[in-house]
Length: 154
Image 1 (cartoon, helix red, strand yellow):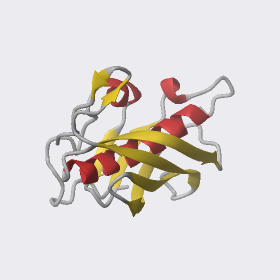
Image 2 (cartoon, one colour):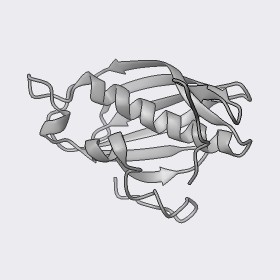
Image 3 (cartoon, one colour):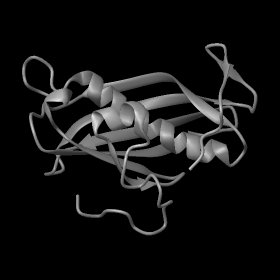
């Protein structure tokens, strides 16, 4: 997991979380482009369920975060924003400690919807979780939960 920022990506958010939930969970962006989003986090107590393994919700959240970020970067080129409408994440192997890398790539990028796929691996490259997220592309001025949605900005 040594390949940090490669130079082609935007500088600002690449090495830190964007704030809010991402920051709370300790997510760090390694690569941030419209073709691939890579984030990492170090497993800590905040990520564990009562049996001492990474909570499935954390896997769902990282898949959603990486996929949504990539889709948003793609949609912003058209002045759109995106919202996730489906997240199907499978938990494949338990993890208790270490560093996790989540890589998301697009499967379908349409003007009205996108589908992205992400995988989560540990430091040895062992697959921990895999998921797909379907996202709705929103036109400028669209509202979600009664408020206008601002397009994603780098």
